[in-house]
Length: 233
Ligand SMILES: *Cc1c(COP(=O)(O)O)cnc(C)c1O
Image (tube, rainbow, N blue to C red):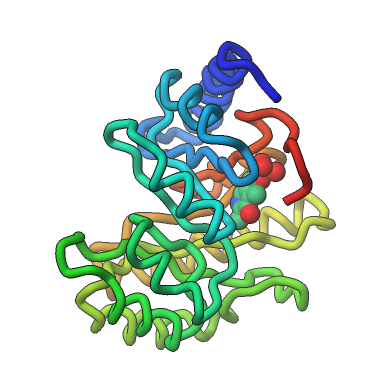
């Protein structure tokens, strides 16, 4: 388990890496959000990252995420659900999270819309795209994005914010770059239809520089902030 000062040090280091990657592509570092993926890490780790400056946190498991959110007393924290989502868990997610990155079916979107509590602002959502056509990964085919986006945009308890992807892991840098470029193109197309779209959630510890060069606005990093996982997630 990492100490608060180790977490703070990694957070600073990661910010420098992101800023350098942004400047290398003539981008403003401010336009790239770092989502601290706190799945499997305790609330004390979230508190340490928050003290270092992190405000956006990502969780993959509904039960664990909801428990952490309920116990968290920090100000201005934004919670992102980035895990697979089944119908029987949508109510918990709609009631506790601010964002969901993993929408790939209308049925799930409709349930989140129906279950989002009236006193909360609309749930911010991204559509997950299976850009590498990886049979082991969730997500829409690229040519299915426009139709689902149109449906989601009619659900007023959701706010369509963009796209998310997890490319296949075992690719060459060239293939990965191609996937990221295709995501950026899909993202631009989506923005022409839906001007409120502002989020391209793409890039993790090992590929964040390539993702930023391609136009990512949100990288998702866990171990690069919190250290190795206490248990396998
Ligand atoms: C776990 C996870 C991450 C972060 O992975 P690390 O290996 O902890 O950096 C990013 N995105 C998604 C969707 C994840 O599930």
